[in-house]
Length: 346
Image 1 (tube, one colour):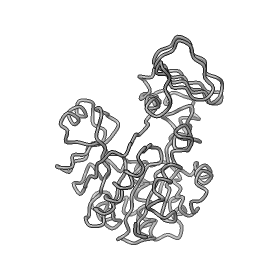
Image 2 (cartoon, rainbow, N blue to C red):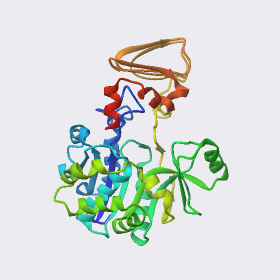
Image 3 (cartoon, helix red, strand yellow):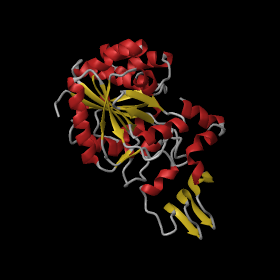
Image 4 (spheres, rainbow, N blue to C red):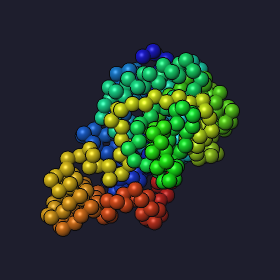
């Protein structure tokens, strides 16, 4: 790849979907349950064959600075951009855009990538990413990586490449219609663009984001600027702020073994499963169980005569729930003690 090409890893997760194994201090991207390496480490190693490490930026929460530096010690410290508070992905991407503009100018190419997803075919991923960079270099568009949907998920964005329509998190009936039509792909949560093109698009649709990017681009230190500006920003996802409101988009689709691993229900696809369909990791025992997910990272988990149940321990916390309710785990966190709720909202 050319020297003026950047990769931006968004790594500000709050640790909700794998609680109690994950937490605000150790969100999902730092868990090492998938192949023995953390997801953020895998995210960086996937792109280093085509992007020099000095052009890899990580945008994360200020509270995760030490964990990020420890996990990625070879990453230049000035490449770790710290959000003083969480404002979702639009401000995070605008911040990174400003840094890319400062380092590479409007012709620099950049991709926003995720720190908490699995891609079991990294070579195929890099091939698609190269293609997306190529399109972004020639057109004033935002390029997304598309994945063929396998069920009507309501937690992903959907893209119709022919109509150039992006719909974030549709309801169940709409998602089912999209999947049945065969004309929509899932948005894998990654966006590739030329810096000048995204700057112009934000100028049309989200002036607040342009102001943020310009302030970062003009500053000696992005982190110093963010302390002042970030608390005043609107919290909004890039998908809503930009992608749903533009037709200046292109899609590169393919099979690169992508999985959002959005919660405990996804583990069976990536971890060893016994003859009764149980996933077991850490200190666990079971008898006459089927379809259960048992994880012991604290006290030992012992299960008897259960079906389709998740039991996960970490430290002095234990979670027990039906596996079918894994997607609703956030509801539990909303009623946990105020200190935890406050931390995940920062």
